[in-house]
Amino acid sequence: MDEFRMPRRVEVDPSRSITDYLVDHARLRPQQVLYEEQVDGAWVAHDAAWTLARVEELAKGLMAAGIGAGDTVAIMSRTRLEWTLLDLAAWHAGAVPVPIYESSSPEQAHWILSDSGARAVVVENADNAATVEAARAVDGGLPALGPVWRIDDGALATLTELGRDVPDAALEARRAAVGLDDLATIIYTSGTTGRPKGAELTHGNFVLLGLEAIDAIREVFEQPGARSLLFLPLAHVFARFVEVLVLLAGTPLGHTPDTKQAVADFATFRPTFILSVPRVWEKVYNGAEQKTGGGLKLRIFRWAARVAIAYSRALDTGGPRPALALQHRVADRLVLAKIRAAMGGQATYAVSGGAPLGERLGHFYRGLGLTVLEGYGLTETTAPTNVNRPEKIKIGTVGPPLPGTAVRIADDGEILVRGIPVFRGYRNNPEGTAAAIVDGWFHTGDLGSMDEDGYLRITGRKKEIIVTAGGKNVAPAPLEDSIRAHPIVSQCVVVGDHRPYVAALITLDGEMLPGWLANHGRPALTVERAAADPFVREHLQLAIDRANAKVSRAESIRQFRVLTTDFTVENGYLTPSLKVKRDAVLADHADTVEDLYAGAAAQRAAAAAQRAAEAAQGAAEAAS
Image (cartoon, rainbow, N blue to C red):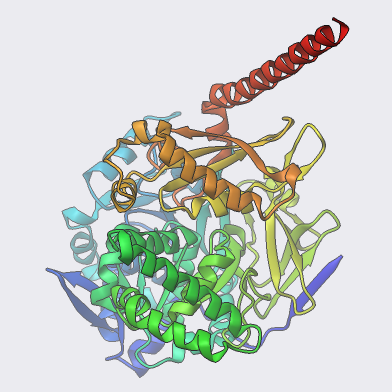
């Protein structure tokens, strides 16, 4: 049983909480910029003094509305500055903010609002308000829920007006009463299966882990002009941790509502570090490739990408030879510098989490000049347990544990975690808590291995392991990640549990498809026609062949089927953090899977019959 521990480096007064760091900034560095928001196409800076004043106004409004210490207040919105201000205001008032994804259904919203006991909810717009109202009609309603405030209908102004008569002393007493052991938030796991569980995270989880993370990757935060752009959904633990992390560091943070807008906003906001999930890095790469237009420019792009990857690999083996260094300078001038410019031209570090990034992209971005520090964590661990260090990166791993964290590999390969990141338990679910935390160790459900330096490699998800009819254990994630790297592949789900071999369901990226076809000199096709097009299928088979080259014959994909409907958050096949809900996909596409194997079985039977007939004919001829 492998185990690696990193001792704590930072000590914190247990009476402190998240908002103490906002107060510190406002008192000691009042003109320090903490946040920037886009107004009429321009970025407007807000300093610490402005931020604290707004947070205090909103916190008083919550108190005046009857929100007591420890009460839960739900927030349902896309990522925007108001989300962060409301989060801080709730903490300032001693309350517990509970996020709800703005794409949630009334049933999902009802569960979170009822299980958390939310006393009020702030939504972004009329659609979100309608979802909450519909949630009131589900399973006996929401008797504990009070007001519903809308951001686009003046919610912040309403709260500010409500709180005008609340004394400063009353607010300060609320804020000062909160310490590291107090509940900070309840984040409901988006869940690929079953009903979401509410993970209770404390101020200590965020503060202690955040300060240790800043100390461990100090280069990211201490570079000149350090700043970051947040575009992940704030209902997700990764974005929420980032929100607190940059506050602790005193680093300016911009907000933008989604990943599509973020790619455009990189150029104007000019972040120095970017925190994201692998799907965004895939999109940036594939988008850059598509923009080449095909022909010679496409060949140059692909050559430059190969050079960047080779250059990065060489950094791990003594450094690039002169010829490779020269090629890299040429590739940088022709291609790589343009990609950096599209990301604002200042980004030098990135932190990737939420899913495996893959070695190819890790090496490409480092060769580009953007050092990607891949990390690992879950909702129940306040996001990161592990992250690569700038001074020692091992691409393909998620790095060693952060200080204050211990990681153990159980005998069956499951990753276990204990220490400052681990949540205090599931809301109203002692049985679930007892099953998840055993003898102080949180059972992640993920599989992995560690090297002698404590660098963790994720090998799969315990409950997703496929066991073929031949008894071969197959981890689907590495195959899926490799295939998803193809520009026109949106999603991939590997199947084969109790089947004779492994197969795959693939969806196409409707945004990338037109440009990819044009770059290959092919006519435009709808997704439906592309799914059956021989040229498209040939290139998908090449992607599968590349994935198969990394595994044994028994683990390789033998058949695939292209679905004509993509997996999205809206149709229920993706979680809001863009993970595939495997059970939902397999349940709704069970007939497709059956047809896939039945068709292959019929082909095998026909081939066997043909061979038997040929053998019989040969025997008859020999006899005559």
